[in-house]
Each structure stands twice: as structure tokens, then as C-alpha cells.
Amino acid sequence: MTILKYKDIKKMDNKEREAKLKELRFSLTKSNVTANKANAKTKEIKRAIARLLTFNTLNKKEVLKAKK
Image 1 (cartoon, rainbow, N blue to C red):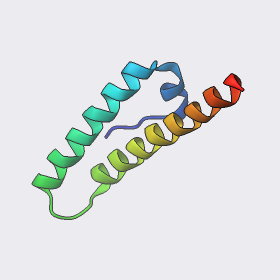
Image 2 (tube, rainbow, N blue to C red; image 1 turned 180 degrees about the vertical axis):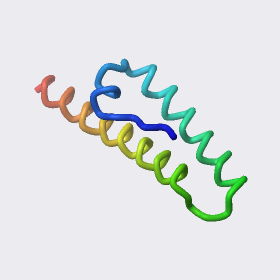
Image 3 (tube, helix red, strand yellow; image 1 turned 90 degrees about the vertical axis):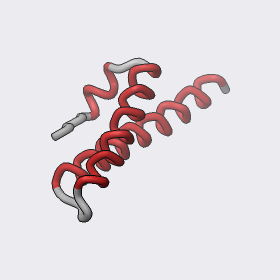
């Protein structure tokens, strides 16, 4: 299982987050090929991807706010 928590994401820099996102997407496609229906592993991978994307979006908004 790939448990990725907010505090772990916060510690990563931008390049690490992008690499992790790429890795998770690859593992999601790999697990979907082996299993036809969603199981606990695919659900957790999807949640981790969602956490990363949400953090990236919020981080971009904060950066834009700081520039103003």
C-alpha cells in the first residue's frame, strides 16, 4: 500500500512531488492491468494521487497570492 500523508507531501520539493505523481500514475495503470475491478490498493493509489494534485493546486494559489 502506498500511504502518502499530507505532512510527507509538505516535506517534498516540487521535483520530488512530480516524480512521485508520475510513479503513482504508473503503478495505478500497472495495477489496473492486473485486476479488473477496484480493490484497496487502487483506491489508496488514487487517494495519494488526489492528495498530490490538491497540494500542488493549493501551493500554486499561495504562490500567486504572495506575488500580489
